[in-house]
Length: 299
Image (cartoon, rainbow, N blue to C red; front, side, top):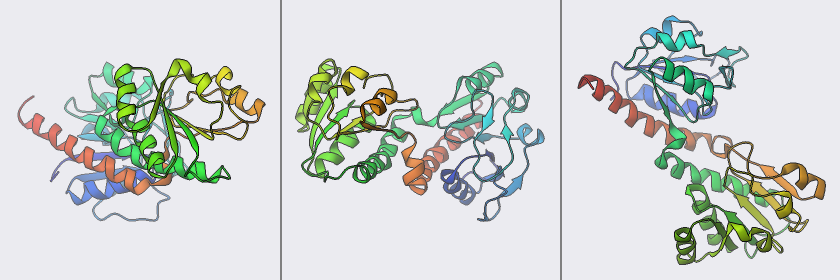
């Protein structure tokens, strides 16, 4: 239980709704900002405007998946008001408090560090990333089905990166009967991909591996699907880039050559916001409880 813990939410999308509900059920004192257009009502949850007094007693400040932009603006789909987190507001937070977000831009990192406020980026955690890889893979499969005229079964697929998302993506394709090649950089990943029944190759050989593919799924957040690679890809193929924005694909060249290339970051919040919210709520419950325990122990 989180009885007596002061939690403030500022902005967000449908994922936040599940987190708000769960933390309120755990008896946290929850205040939400930027939800004035929301029809849902939460028992025991207080709605508020963005005012400085909120920050003075906050134990946990919860921001959207991308905390703020580079100017401190917060994405909030349930309000028409502009919400901005200022350095002065962060300075008001108690030193024992914590700011939670999915991923932080330099602006948020810098002001939290300057005022010695702990910042937790949930998407950096292995557990969150692995859980989120499930709706990511399902969303990518949906996009593949919508943008091709073939079945996944029997299709020639390439997945780049045997990380947390790449592993789940490749396994999901394999389960549907696709022929899956895995592009990796490290010898141990090559061995693991082979053991899992995929056809592994090294990224340096990517240009030669894409000559007859139907689908390419990239999970590597650096420019890897270059013009040279795209020049070898059949026009019928579809590229689905799952890496964080701006992705790892030369989208301009793909369009010029007539290869459909789709950037698809943040799929959990798009295709399964309730599940994505439950994932984050479970982790936040654990982290906030640990934060309160540490404070009680004088850490």
